[in-house]
Image (cartoon, rainbow, N blue to C red; front, side):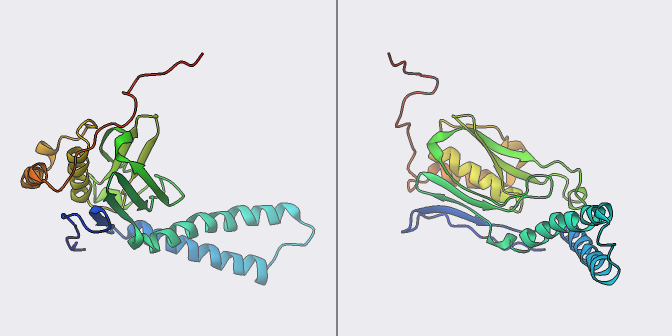
Length: 224
């Protein structure tokens, strides 16, 4: 599916420096989850309403729940979340990164939503998503997601439904805004087409570079 370029380079009145919207990169996993959900619904109708187990047969009822209701919850959850993936976004607003990101089946269950202070980032980059358990990943072998490692040890992994180019562009902006954060992605070799973007962002006077406003990293204060 062709992707329309969606980006905001100039700083807006609301403080948004850059914003990216999600882009679906495959339908195979979605269709598979939908098919399994429909099969589970049909099984529940047949075995609960048409041919239900005996009322006193607890084992049969337990087995019924295990093989129908539980898979329905899993696959139905995926269908619902992947149906509203278009609400996902990653934006740089002033000194923070805000995001809403729909995970894949093997990268999480809950929709990821958070706001991260750019000054709290220790290192960042993009990480290749594992191909296992996904039919879509067989075609999109190099699909990546954004990774932020914070100074307090926390880690943020998100951006499954964003193109690699969008994720790398976000990295370019983060590096410009907070040069102290370590970039762990080799943009020059992996995405040479973004060389002009890097030069443009590096020369921009509209993006204010941030400095630490707290204690230097690694410094601890002992209180008596």
